[in-house]
Amino acid sequence: MRVVLAEDSVILRDGLVALLARRGHQVLAALGDGETLVREVDALIATGTPPDVVVADIRMPPNHTDEGLRAALALRAAHPELGVLLFSQYVETRYASRLLAGDARGVGYLLKDRVADVGDFVDALRRVADGQTVLDPEVVSQLLSSSTARDDGVGRLTAREREVLELMAQGRSNGAIAEQLFLSYGAVEKNVAAIFTKLGLEPDAADHRRVLAVLRYLGV
Image 1 (tube, rainbow, N blue to C red):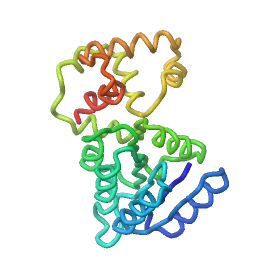
Image 2 (cartoon, helix red, strand yellow; image 1 turned 135 degrees about the vertical axis):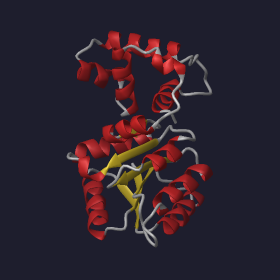
Image 3 (cartoon, helix red, strand yellow; image 1 turned 45 degrees about the vertical axis):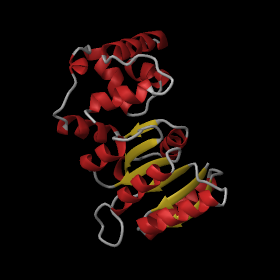
């Protein structure tokens, strides 16, 4: 993978560069603020060396509020195919909602303190680069608790279907869901099909039903 990092902590930034390099990935740039991130990614894309995924903290200089998020939103607006992973110390539901409100394919949000395994982090990066949606379980939980506008279709889901959909929201594949819930692969497929039906998500080449179902569930 080709990666661009935006993290104002020098120690964490250098650590991420080192661990990605050790695993054979190419870090095209490692930056400390949002404005430089946008300029650098635009330049890389213009010269024909686009990153597969951008990793950005939410709070960066100069004000340490939402500079990283605004940079991520600007990059996604200009380059919809670009994978973006927010890597933050905090759960910011309003920021997560803004990022997911557009096309949520190739979007992720992980919490720094909850990533205990390097392999899991790199796997999340790879899934985001491949166009999947990857959310930390705590982000999912807080989005659900903060959501007030719920579609009737969500209320028709069974308890098992809700479990499956919550794991889908975390970016789990059908195989991983089957392992987590001790179900057969076929049982998971049936639950996923039932979710799509109850949420009224008909097959459409222009839409990604898995992502749409997750967004409906989260109230985004």
